[in-house]
Image (cartoon, rainbow, N blue to C red):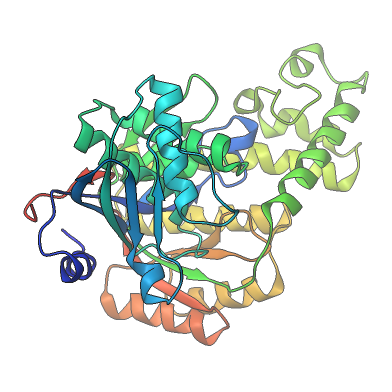
Length: 399
C-alpha cells in the first residue's frame, strides 16, 4: 500500500519523522479537451505518488526535494509563512509557496509558523501524470494534517488548484488537482459550483507512455477554442436553424449547453459551415456522448468492463485524431504498436500533439510488459505500468 522505496529514501536522510502524507499522480482518462467547455471529465488517480515528510517544527518553512538533490540540482527552499511570495520561474518551491498563499487567501487561515519537510516523488515530471498537482495536493495535505486546518477533500483540491492557477500562474483547469485529491475515478463537473461524483471503478490496469515529443498547451487550446467560436458564429447566424437549437448554442466555446445537444439535430447544419469548425463542434458533442456511455457501463458494473472501456478509449482517441486533429504520425506509430501487443484501447492523455498515451490493458503482467516494451520500441521515451490508487492520505506506520 505504501511506496516502500520512496519512504526508504526519506528515512535514509532522516531517521524519524513527525508526519508522512502522500498524493497520487493522475491520468486524463475520459472527455479530453472538454473541461474548458464546462463539460464533465474523468481523471483517474494512479499508484505513482508524491510523499511529503515533516521532520521537525520550524519558524520558517524549509523544504528539501530529494529528487532534485539526487540530480545534483538546487534542492532546498526556505520561506516565511507570512510572506509566501513566488521565487524565480521554474523553481519547485513556487508550488509550495503558492499552496500556503492559497490557504491564507481562500480559507482565511494565516500560518504563523512553518516546518522542515522532505519531499520524494515517484510521479515523473513532464510524463503526463500531473506531477505539479501531486506536489501541491501532498503539501496541502501535510499543512492540513500538521496544523489541524480541517480541510475536506474538496477544499484540499480547490486550494491546490488556486495555488497553481492563480499564484504560479499556469492556465490549468481543475482536472489534475481534483483527480489527485479525491483519488480513484471521479466524474468532475468543472463549472462553478464545482461538483464531484465518485465512480464505482475499483480496478483498472493501465500503461502510460511519454512520447518524448514536447508541446505547449498554449499552442493547442486557443486555436481550437477560436475554431469552435468561428463555427458557433456561423451557426447562430444561419436563419435555417430552429430557435430551439439556437437556444442551446452561443457565440463562445464555453457558452453552449453542450450536453443537451444531440449530434443528429446539429449535423445537417454543420455541413454548411467551414470544415475545421464543423469538426471541432462535432467532436465536442460526440466525445461527451462517448463519455456518458462509459459512465453508464461503470455504474452498471458491466461484465468485461475493462475490455469495454478499452473500446471506448479507442473511440475517444479516434475522435481526438480525426475531429480535433491533435495526434501526430509518431503518436499513431506508438499507439498501433501498443494495440498490436495486446492493449484493449489506447488514447492521447492530455492536450495532444505529443505528450503521453494511455492504454487500458489486460490484467496479466506479461501482457502489460509486452505493451510497454512495444511502445518503447516504437519510439516512446519512457513508460509506466499503473493501476488505480487512493487520493491524498496520511501514511500510517512510519511515525
